[in-house]
Amino acid sequence: MGGPGGEPRGHAAGLIVPNYWLVKTEPTAYSYDDLARAQTAVWDGVKNPVAIRNLKAMHPGDQVLVYHTGDEKAVVGWATVVSAPYPDPKNTKLVAIDLKAHRRLPQAVTLAQIKADKTFADLPIVRQGRLSVSPVTAPQWKKILQLAGADD
Image 1 (spheres, rainbow, N blue to C red):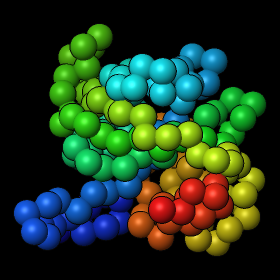
Image 2 (image 1 turned 180 degrees about the horizontal axis):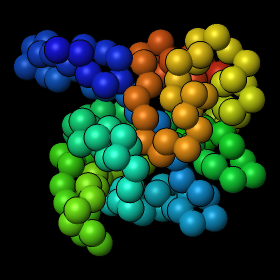
Image 3 (image 1 turned 180 degrees about the vertical axis):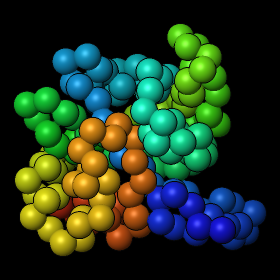
Image 4 (image 1 turned 30 degrees about the horizontal axis):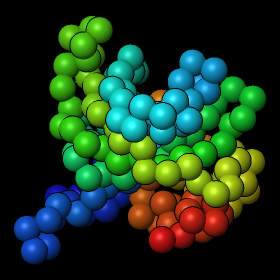
């Protein structure tokens, strides 16, 4: 069965193949640097039904790009999902997950760079700019890391 990140979920030597995601945050409210300082944080407050569905599809081990909105408009960091989805502690009608900071990207990848590259033509941030949690395909993930100088 295919995962929302465009990659098949499956078992290889007992491991689940991770999916890839992008989460958006306003850096003046909560930035990647805040996540890095905390090391692990609750990702909550998501109200859009599609974004909630995406949160519910996340699994521990999934990889996440952190995108700063506002003036920055760029992918700046890399995190990992470390919990299964659970009721949002502030509003149990919503869903939350826990993210662990992996690292800040060596170079931010701007929305302008993303929109200029055909690899990202179907990336939700290009098509649905307001969606706060969205899937990323494996080729898109690899290309973002390459553009950021962090391909590993």
